[in-house]
Image (cartoon, rainbow, N blue to C red; front, side, top):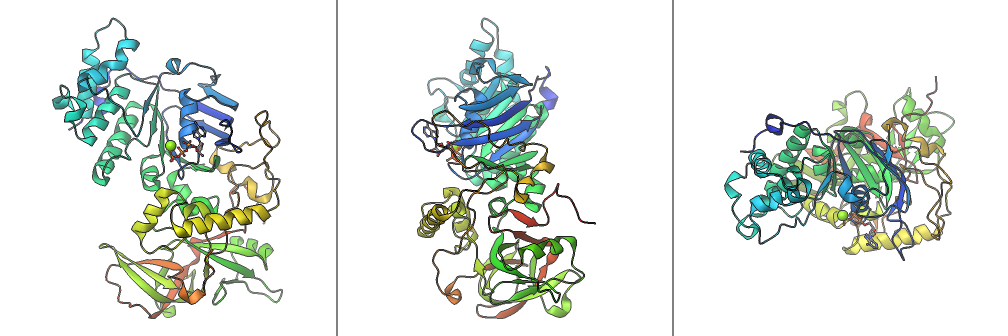
Length: 502
Ligand SMILES: Nc1ncnc2c1ncn2[C@@H]1O[C@H](COP(=O)(O)OP(=O)(O)OP(=O)(O)O)[C@@H](O)[C@H]1O
Ligand SMILES: [Mg+2]
């Protein structure tokens, strides 16, 4: 078994702070930037995960940090020093890729020692290789060639090649995605232990939200080149800045329902889902009072599957309100069941993340990997999004009520409206991080409500006794009710950093 890095690492590793300030990347002949005014402070020793769907610009950010890709505009600071033009070799960073390339004609020992030939020319580096192999628990395979190793072993050798250099920063781009689920989970834990033991600043790219949540000190969530939120995994789950983050993080995916707020002057407040209304208890909480300004407007309600339970109204606790639904199907998961219900609501769709309710959670996970595009519904959703986008007026973002939601995160904020774009590139509407672009739209298939496969997924114990077609009472925990405005920005719970009413 690999031993603890901290037990073994004799020499303390100098690790670095990384700052990206308003960094954009335009590739030639591409109309929009791959990375758009990306700002982030990564303190020394942090394990930061870059998370987002395929094509959102994660690898481009990583490659700009590594110096493998030019920065079009903006600044990269390493330990506070301007480093845009620093040669990759002078950055003391080690990269581990998804397609870890080992030299096939070299043994594991030679592969691990290879970079040291250049970093420690003329010096004996056998001890460094042995130390690395001990840490990774691969002493027995040091004399084998890559062709004689399993995928997991090869990946460890690739990690070894990065570790042996004693880098000041690790940059990892989906290093585990070629491995099977069990090995991935195992190596994930190992990577976390190793990098924390070394205390080396690590930027880890993945599109797998579960991996991001389990590894990161903080998670930076990207969408279409734009940073959406940077926060601890816990905050990203519990306080998503917008509907995209809410939908991207968590399994099963959060239930997103279209609704309107009814707040008549005569008193009371309801969230109207079309066929059912959810009454908000009086006296209204601060967050619910804030919904009054949405009166008559379209909103999106987010309910995680654990925020709703199947139980009689008489069993309601304080803060729970009543809905009902018809069981569409029950997904047995062993330790729990997921009950798919039809409440007569209209689901909201986040285009890149496909339709909200494909049949099973595994299909959902698959759809998420694809990142929006290959299934029929996904294509429809994207088509509809494009149509909607074409009809949307350009917003001047940056200082609206919805744009200030980022201040509590400590970084990722600070977008400067009006900052220069790349020369010769088309102007884009200014957009602060945390603001979504076109986020949500009507369900694209437009079929009658009764034909939908269910609009709400509820998590229950494994032995739930309900059958398809049963009408069941539901209790909604208002403490876990999210409301997003029609652009997808969270309005309930109220964004942090906003002045509170007395
Ligand atoms: N060399 C290039 N030339 C032109 N466009 C590029 C180039 N490299 C990347 N892109 C584009 O930039 C965008 C971001 O790419 P990037 O590889 O950073 O995405 P990613 O988030 O890492 O995706 P994935 O999860 O699929 O690896 C994509 O639209 C991609 O097509
Ligand atoms: Mg990538």
